[in-house]
Length: 281
Length: 314
Image 1 (spheres, rainbow over the protein chains, first blue to last red):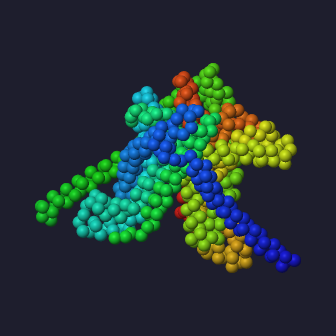
Image 2: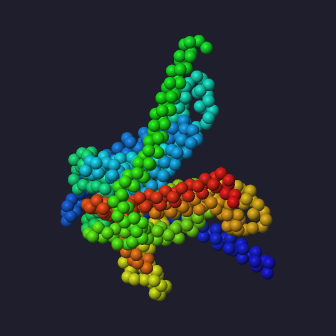
Image 3: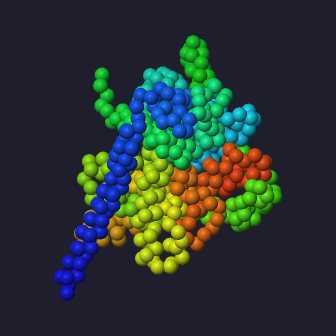
């Protein structure tokens, strides 16, 4: 009786822990399924024209998404120019200057922004930029992505700066350097690798954002006329093409999906590799 | 102290004050931006708030032509899809976290953890694309008919099998939030002291009993934190849901029925909203989403911090 009860307990243990292993296999295989499916479906439609030509009208097959690639690049550029410096300096403030109370306030703000659905950020930029200018624009799209980057950069910059040992700071101060010089010449360089990683991860994250662009940069079937005019972007093109009823457009959506996924995963892996790679001379 | 030195020190200090000021300005900018976000949502939803009041949240008429707006159907869709997603993703995610923290050798755990973080990095529009072309046909041809057959007339699983709808959206969401539950859950479980496990094992419990009866209760607040964090993501997720939920502003009993979510209605109708009251109603939906995710995320952070500080002691 006792023996059989113990046996049952052991069986339960093996079964339940085995189940957790099965769950892990399932979850990880979803990633490989996503990758394989996009490579197969998108691989057929990615060609040189995809990168160099404009979208063709419905009914004509072929064509590309050159305008969307350029549009995405421009918006990412604007996001980097606005989101990175603000996030960096706010993170610097948190780790090097802030007192308890102000730090809590800044962290609270960054955490609210960080958890905000990206579509709400889209509304924010719409009311702040699109409404006054009466124009959907590349600029508005880029700013929306920039706002999303700010809290990501703030919190990760703070984290990496905090990881710099206090002894480094003390050594610099003891040599007579001011706090500013210490931060600029000692602390930030020591954390540079982590900060660059964070910037890459942040850019990768916003490069796939679709929702905040729907009504900030809108979309465009042609080349954008400039920063103050609507522009196509890769994620919005995928969305528009995926929900369209045309087979040609679906094929283009898969191609765009593959290109976007490749970019996002490559920059993710690159950032991680940079963080763990050993420092060579 | 000679005069030259004191001048130099004063100059250094001035530089520090300046640097402090600049950094403070940017830290303040983050707070200001958050405040501005709340204010813009509040200000630009004024018309809808004044005209519909609290009824906005409980009526489900959404009629842009007549200028009547109620968001109940969207709130329902958001809550239901998130609930379905949690129902699937919580057991799955906690299971994976247990495997990675308790069983897997460190290298395997790190590799699988990294792969799941890549899964979290997949853009939501790509999940939507896969949802439309893989999951929707699968649901229509196999899953929904099968569920209907098994449950025989149970209202939750009734009605025509369109493939799209609440259940499909919930499943896509589940896939998207599992990585969040795993990455936070794994950290939380790893922070449980070794002695807890050793004591349980020494008292004769099986490895599973040590996990289920000792480690999980110890880590409970942190695990709830992980779940709330995932819930926050699910509530605001836009593209993937928009693409598979069906976009019909009605509350139906069946999980197979097309529905609508708060984020989806903003995504679909925002750039078409020409009437001011229409726009303000959509922004009020955004305001509801803002408040909801803010509260959920605050709870999540509190719970995770509680585990980190006290080691989860109840």
